[in-house]
Image (cartoon, rainbow, N blue to C red; front, side, top):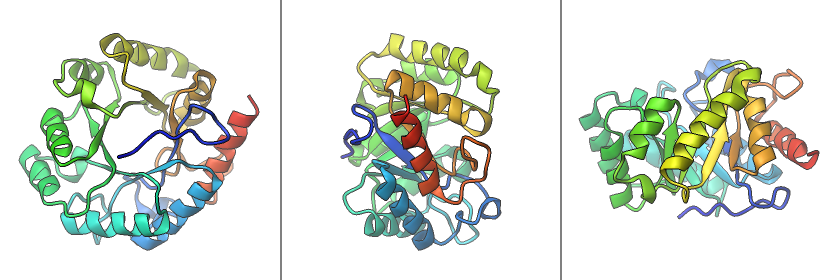
Length: 252
């Protein structure tokens, strides 16, 4: 099971590295269809202070995959490179759009992640969560919008979730606080006992990170969410993003 062990640099916060996401491997030199290469980059992020890893297993063509063989290969690589570090995986519907095929794929997993993200605005979220929980996999509830928050609030698995991921879209940084406050309010009104992890993507990434640091919420950073450092330069790897994140926390 994953535990949100606080990093030494940020008491009370989990800093997770989201190392690849659904991005095309052509978008950055550290994005790869090679599980071992991404695992080495993940290990460097852990060395900089990341307390958990979120990874998107890939098939042979470099696209996200829920197939048992692909999941096993990627989880094995991550655990070999990052022993003792909690590893999470995606269950995004884009990897298997039909609910029955998604459930069938997860049921065949031979290597299980410590936790898996389930996007509550997607069809079949409750069924996917139930299957993961039955297999001993912790569930992170992905909430991207008000609809997802409301669906999660009505879920019979709401209180069983490890945490809720408040995932802000690619919006201007000036809009981050208002959008985040709305979603956090919806989640905490429904369930105050489940931890919140706040993060953004693209333009909202660093503003969301700063807001999470301000409020001592769990958060994440990595090439899945953005390719650039706070000063706009392209990050050379996930470790550089984690290092920049820790520096921003320390500077508060």
